[in-house]
Picture 1 (tube, helix red, strand yellow):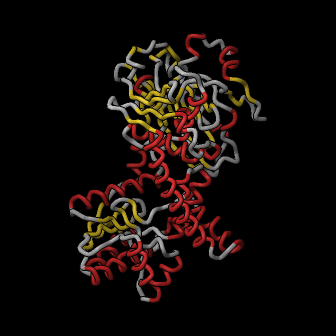
Picture 2 (cartoon, rainbow, N blue to C red):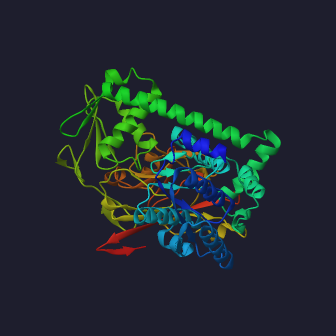
Picture 3 (cartoon, rainbow, N blue to C red):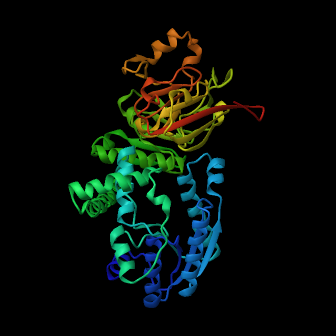
Length: 488
């Protein structure tokens, strides 16, 4: 207990008079969290409100967890707010995995209770093993410095007091104090990626590499977060020198001063500038940072269209980043070209757009709706199950690098055309397929950070084909809206 109290004080997580909204599932982690908060209630006079979410998946077992949690809270004089949700139905409706839908439902429940109860903090029961799993997932899927920092002990009003403990320490504490907890049998299954890491990867690291692997990963993540904070300070200092924010809302990145910065600061400056100009950080990816940075090697007048109606233009002084109206560039109407959509032709002038995976993305300029779902491949999988529809494609999700983006062609684009990995220049492919020259520049493409994966209305890359070795399938469905009626 004293170890956790010291950790809480180190990060100023909870102070006297706080009203803490705590996620209590009945599992070992959350039960331990409750007892930590009860100790703080004695020492600091904090108030506690528990939140329990019944996901409607495990039937009788879930009802038993709910009853256990209610009884535990009542025994210790803690108010408990219970939510009943049908997570499987919500997952289908939102086009999400059950795992992701469950996370979102829990977060929404915490936030709703936080507002209604006028809370000051939201406490969650993540521990060091959770953090190690998160690091491995981020590494495997591709992550920047932020992703390598793992789960933060404090993120706004969300605090995680148990991030100083391993799962073994938590269960040891409960056993020592003769305190029961609920066992979620789905945690013993390997249907979810996190469970596979928990059961198949981390035990190997602990048993065959180093018994303290989880603790060492957490120590590394703490150091990475410290490095990230330092780099952010350096980035802010460099921004005051290199970037001019004009009254018009434009941002000028001065080339002479910018080029003197270390590359890591240049990249962070570019991202920071994009976020400021857009007014948001969401969906600003490495693709957009690279597009902005590439302009410094171009001649004056060259430009790039970016998300949130941003346009980056190379000038004699450097690169100017400005917002433009939809369908306009530099205040002048863009010549609207016809391109191939899902059924026939649609209006094709559009800006690059990052796809929500999983989720639904609307490309309004093209009247397209793109739905991405992650499917776990069944044990009786056969290649005959792969859809052969023109606008529904299956891809091997684990070979995709970084974000998926809908964009038009760029210089150097190519397409993998066979299973041996041989590629063909996109320009040559379009010529061979007799795609009219006036349509090639506005043809919508789906790409990751490295390559073209799908030319909408045409072929898919052979690099991302689903095979017997595929673990997770990314299904992409493209539909077109015409006169407010969706066509598949």
